[in-house]
Amino acid sequence: MIADAMKQARKIHRKAIESTYDGTCNIYEKQPYKDPDTKVTSQKMMKVVEDRSCHLSFSNISPADETESISRLRQVIKLFLAPEIVVKPGSKIEVTQVGRTEFYSGSGKPAVYCSHQEIVLELWKEKA
Image (cartoon, rainbow, N blue to C red):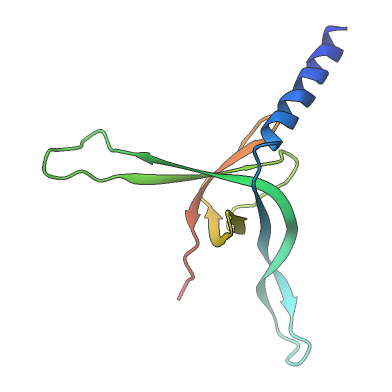
């Protein structure tokens, strides 16, 4: 009986969090790709998750060693996403929210909860 109540509470909690999702994301991973012309296999970014609801959150953090003359703010970008979606290290994440699309990479291991997961992101930087 208590277990059923907990399951119901988790469902309600997840639904409440997902009601705040106002964006969509696509997730790309490097996967082997064989060029049909050259027959050479290389790594290519392939879409593995498409049009999943999500939410981006932005916050600024000031460092502990802030001085009067120098004040640096660091922006923390966090993606809220369904917990069953697996985002591998090195993935490229395309997020569209409020009419804007940006590309990000996951910068760490996601914090996964029953209702959602949170992934700290960085702006995607193409390797030269």
